[in-house]
Length: 222
Image (cartoon, rainbow, N blue to C red; front, top):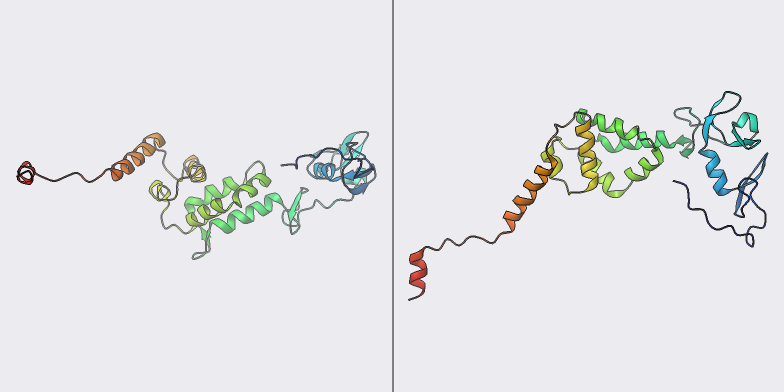
């Protein structure tokens, strides 16, 4: 997700950006001029097919049209060291997709076996294939999500009952949905399951039923 754009500030940044025309901190000097941080980030995330036929990141501008590095002369490192694709890099020379994949493998691998439980393999594939890997990585790095996935990784059996034993959360429901969607768990009536859980908990909260007999009550009154 792009950073919220601040209000143009010509007093602090007198020189305007060559692309958006606003006054923000300039972070790069490219053939079409000096570029602000917002336009720099947008350029790294612009993909498509250049007029020359190159498909990949199109950070440059020629006559207002996005162009590849070769045509525009823009110097920008967007080559992933792992998969080789042109994409916005996250860290260590790796793109967001590759970092997301490595994170999923790390969290879902059982440290005792060194492997991902076969039941979890479809979940791993689905997480790696998220349409927006940057959003996926942000989600998966949340503490509660990381904890749930690592708990699943070491679970001897993965079932609806084992998931029910985990703290209730939207994350648990989402992962359950992935398991069901990919055939790793059978479908069940979730409304009925929630009602059953609620009713069992409600019964547990009831006060103990008195076992006094009528004769006990009569004796107590004399």
